[in-house]
Image 1: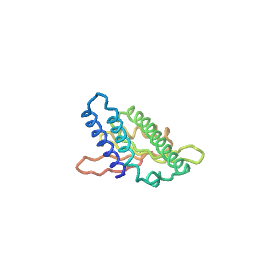
Image 2: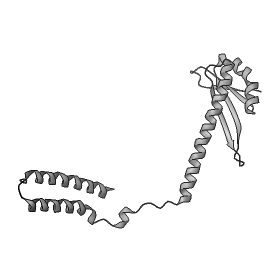
Image 3: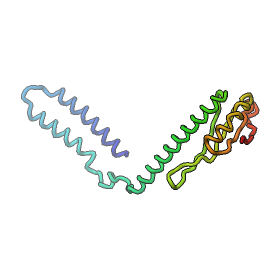
Length: 168
């Protein structure tokens, strides 16, 4: 990397020096001077690369199998996030229908080998004054998602803890 920086600096310096020389050379019939400046410029561009070895340009070896595995993992992760986001939106709309204004919903899914997913848990964190509304939405959430809904009551921010209950 330092060789590349050195080459870039050398090229920039060469360009500046060449421009200065070309500016100072009179424009009349100095073909030989212009030719000399052009040779200087070309040699200056090639000089930084003269001492480099082919190992300096070696790229790290990466097999297609490695790339395929990483790509599959990335696609799987993005797919899971998209599914969770969609399920959270659906649960939020059910809760809002029952009068819960700003629920926090955590959904955990599991990928099955038959390319399907299963919802493993659904947790709702709501303010204490909205717990009755959340409790009224539990049967619909359970029927829609097929899991037992876990309710957590958010305490005031001074306490920092939540009381856990299981809805049915």
